Image (cartoon, rainbow, N blue to C red):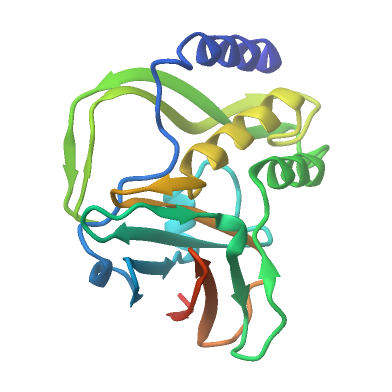
Length: 226
C-alpha cells in the first residue's frame, strides 16, 4: 500500500514537473543574517550551520544520522553574473582538519534507504504533497517565499515488514526533497540559497570551517557548532 501510494505521488510529480520550480530555498534578505559572511569581488556570501532541531524541522529525511547541513547563500552585486558550484564548497571539522566534500542527494538517499531497511515494523517515511500557494513571509528567517506550484515533503506513517524509508519509492522521495532544497549549480545574477550536505559525525568542536571557491575566488567562513 505504501509503495503504491508513493508511486502515484511520484507520477503526479512528473506531471507537474514543468510547473514546479522549487530547487534551492528563498535567500535571507542580506548576508549579515547568516552566522558568517564575506564580501569577495563581485559578490557576497553567507552561511549558517543548522542545529539538530533545525534539521528535524526542515527535512523529512533523517539527516541527523551522519550529516552536517550548512545553509549557503550567494548575493551577486548589481548587474553581475556569478558562477556557483556546490562541488567547490568543503567542510572542515577543525581549522586544519581534512576537507570534507559535499554529498549528492542521490548518494544520501541511497545511504539512508540502506540504513533504514529492516529497522522496524512501524515505518515512518517521507511523503509528498502537491499544491498551489500564495506568497508568504517567514518572520523567523526574514525570507519571503514566492507563490506558485509547490511540492511539500512531510512524514508519513505505515505498518509493514520494511523499515522506515526503506523502499525504492521512499528513496526517490528523499532524493527529491534533498535535491529541491539543495544549493543550485549554475550562473546567477540574483540572490540564491540552498543547503549543502556533508557526511560528517557530530563532533565536540565549538566551530566549523567552510572553504568556498566561487568564480576563482576562495574564502573561508567560520560557523559556530549548534
